[in-house]
Image (cartoon, rainbow, N blue to C red):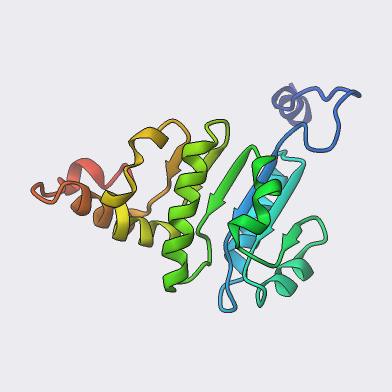
Length: 182
């Protein structure tokens, strides 16, 4: 079997009845004046693997740069959940955190995202990067138990250590057991 035939077997057959958005609408809340690449790569990755629409909700100072990186992205120059609510409710998945930076408003934004996940069980919310930094700060007050079916965290090794020590302060991490997991 040729390589092209092998690759074709992995691709889904697309119907002529499909419309824009039927194969996935993904949002990324991220970016700041200093960090525009992280939300861009997060959003573009979703398009590369088959999503139809990718939205970036970002700080106004980051929006022009991110928009200039690719015309394929739909960029909203605000992270205000109230202003973006209608658009957010139409998403299949939402990534929170890449490039947001470590400012106090990010913590409040995380609280709003967790509440959004709690009230929107059909959407998958991924918390990454700076979102995890603030998740560590307010983990206990957020009571994430009722979001566990649609909330995903993607910590690297250091982020995992921080979260683990916050959730299980009385336990030490078994480095050999968990280092490969991260």
